Length: 468
Image 1 (cartoon, rainbow, N blue to C red):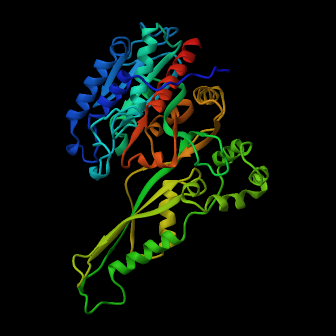
Image 2: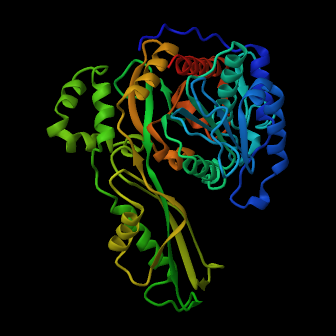
């Protein structure tokens, strides 16, 4: 496919204000559903319906709590006027072109005092739209709907069915949003050519040794697991301690886990990533990567030198919480710690638990898997659907270097992994290292130019699907 470079001027005031208004809805998802303000999600729903009347007139919509699953029947879909679904609601009996994912919820704000503008004020200025969710992930929700609304106004319709799936609880693992919508599609026999979700972006001055912007289209994600270590003891007065306390025993266990990480290794996705970038690098990196078949261990050690690139070559270990005792002069009766792992494809959640038990080697330390966990997943970056996303990226940002990668965290797309032939986690927005720190951090914002890129990219995708 050959695309003409798309012009991406900054969005107009009305378009920017629609996103700003969405950011004013404080749709914070919390692990305890009772603490979630559902009224804010209702405000956002009303805003979407008011802003995009054609979408809500022409697309079918099924709700799962506050999650929204839209079906846009294709012009060649014989089931668009028939194909009854015995379960009621959305049905399909035809091949599906794409499932476009995004999520409407956001993470809480720890401290508003450091923000340039209040995090839920949705301030729109000449350059940026500010607020929690500006990048993660309301801009993608709104950009998809902007593109679909404009396509409908122009009489454009996809040749085959397209789904839009907007979750409401991605930040707290997505069980009742994406989990239920994916199961709904699975029960209807949906199989899409493309699954597109958040994850990768275009970075500048981040990839060492490459002067061009680098677009990393993620083709999977690392797994997630948290292990709790706990120790119980009799307790007593600190003036008469035994040979070890619960805190000391626990501290040794945590140190053993941190000091004995998972081994380094290059996965097929990482090899593919480096191979695609090799041609954009200068010497001696280019020559070294040309020997990746024999120099793999050396390359893995180089990547392990920094925390960002180390995540590419091992299952990472991060002790995150530890507590025990009630006062300095009392021996604690219980101490516990939590260690978070991001799991590389080839390892598993069960491997994480087994690894902890093997390296701790202390029957007095209880080791158990806590809360939600997910297995890693990765799909090959091959085929026309991946090539389409790469070509559209080059159209929106000419001259960009395109490669692949793995999302280091968890996204809603893990629930849909078996529902599409090709999975891509990507948005064509250009971010610096400082911009990346704003995600889940202070002063989250998106530039008008980046928001224009998002809308243009999605419209180009829809136009391509209409020609199929």
